[in-house]
Length: 329
Figure 1 (cartoon, rainbow, N blue to C red):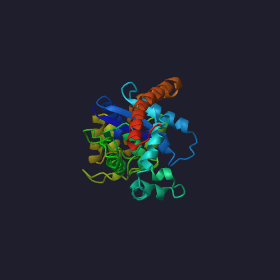
Figure 2 (figure 1 turned 135 degrees about the horizontal axis):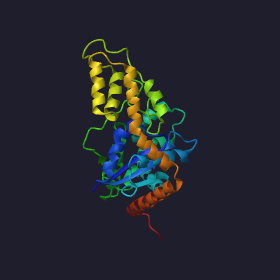
Figure 3 (figure 1 turned 60 degrees about the vertical axis):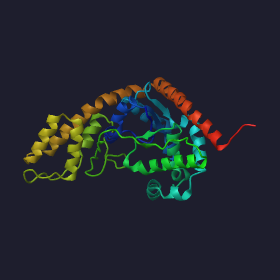
Figure 4 (figure 1 turned 120 degrees about the vertical axis):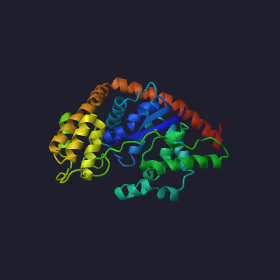
């Protein structure tokens, strides 16, 4: 059984893209592997150093994780900041990480461009903290998106470097987790690109029915097909992609046929899509509201997760200190 580590930043709510991109597979993954799911509240400070309400952000994401089917009795669910061994291993790995290689990472260069007034040391060493989160549990698999592939390769490099420097075979070199199927990329409602918080084009799992209807009815479309079997434009392809994952097959087929024969009414399509999204998200939203209002339960979950995660992390840190040469007098 593989050890798998996956984290999510605590800076935003989950949307349909998150769910279909990975979260729905986490439920299956947790039953087939030894999984650690954590909320990366340290990571969030690299771009939001003074969050308005860090605790509420963490609580939101935690409740959403659980509402989507993550089982804390099966997987280890915890907060990054509850594991004091993480900062210490992060410090030790930083000693063997070089400025040049960190400055060349795509994620760092992108963030420098996006937030030129907040180029902090945490942003530079983001790959080191990510590596720490993974190898502190000696994980062999990590579910990562395309934008994190380079950082995963950095993790492999740091693990390999530690092993080579200290002449040990200690840290495994983790690889990307393969869900065994093509992950669905959910597009946004703005007619292009993927669904995302920063793009402002997302439907969140906890959006109310009224908000969902308003968002979907504002989705970008075009002037409509002008000939039979015309290829749809990017905005219309996006709406059909979302419909394909949330609607009944016959509903999807009906509107596809309506488009092919040029009789489609986009208003009807969007009304149906909105109702289907509401129907799909309703049980998740209901469960989320139950969890979010139960502080005692959430507290027990993170305390239990911290205890389990610290068992693994403390053992790793103890052995790393011994390998490096820290000894008591």
